[in-house]
Structures are given as C-alpha cells and as structure tokens.
Image (cartoon, rainbow, N blue to C red):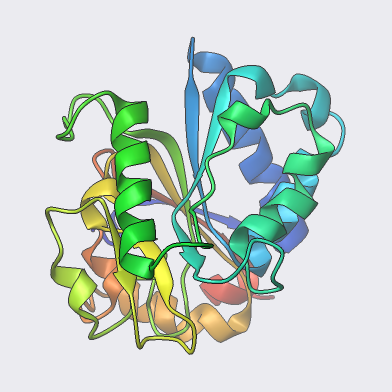
Length: 244
C-alpha cells in the first residue's frame, strides 16, 4: 500500500468533522460520475457515524441513491438481524432511511449456507455486477471503498497471520478462527479494485497502529493493500496524534 506518509492525508478535528468531510467527498465523487456508482462499505463505529450522517439532510436529498449500489467489504457469519452483523448496522444507520432501490443493496449471504459457500456466492455476485471474471486495472470494481483499521492492523477481515492474506485468485473468502464467529471478507484483489479508497480512522487507541503504518510496517495487513488509485486517509486528531 502507498504508506500514509505518501498517500493523501486529511486530519479532521474530531469524528463528527470527519463524517461531514467524508460525506461531502462521497457526494462530490458521485456527482462527478455518470451512471452506476458502486460503494464498498466497512463495519465499525467510525463508518456508523458516517452512514447516519449520509441519511440526514442535505445528503439524503442530494445523493444519487437511485444509481448507487452498496456492497460490503466483510461480514460476520451471523444472521442479518444479529447485533454483530455489518449489514444490520448499515441498514439501521443508512439504508432504511434513504430512497435506495432494494435491487441496489448487495449484502453478503450468511444464512442457509456454509461460510465457504457464502464466499463463493458473493464472489459470483460481484463478478456478475462487474460483468467479467477477471479484474481490469483500467476498470475498477468499486468507485469508493471505505476501509477501517483495527488496532492489530487488520482491514475488512484480513487479520494478521491468516491464510486469506495470501489469496490472490478468489475475490471473496471465508475466514475461520480469527474471531469467535466465522467471517466473510473480500480479498486483496477485490478491495484493491477501487477508483477511490479511503481509510476512516478515529480515536487515540488507533494512534500506535497508524504510526506503524506510516513508517512502513508491512506486518500489518492494512499496509499490504495496494489500491489501484492509491489511498486517502481521513483521521481525527486523536488517531493522528495531533491533539492540541
């Protein structure tokens, strides 16, 4: 990945300022593109605040919901109404509050299938949406990919030491053993196929991890992500270590 020292870096005062800035950033990108606008979503508390912000005025009335499609970068292998479900979080914070056509919402399947089958099914859905079996660097899968950063340096469900880090053929894979519940994650190739990739990072508990990334520690899974277009880092002052 282009390190944070080389990537575009924006430091905002606090989480609320970050949500406002990223909402404007997404709106500008969507307005600048004609046709389908594909977004890959992250779980976590920081994106949750962004999703709630997007569901409020003026974004609720200005965002092109009818042509936007929504995917997930990872998901816990739990029912969609479970408290651990990323789909449930996004649905409650955003999807149920804005005029998004149901056909534009693409959750990861987690019920009635095995984790491996769920990953295979979602991989096929991504390929159908993309219209090809192979990713073309000149034609990214996603217009915007929203990424989180765990204290251990994971992003999506790409955890340190897990075998999925070496997966370059599949677009989606099951992750077993990293968490109490199995997880489904997009792999590096799918996550990297993004026209605009952004890490959203808040809180002083992320400061040490961000510092390691900034100085090129590639033992962290997030540091091994190489998006087509590079990365924008949106941080609050607590995460960046610039509190006054």
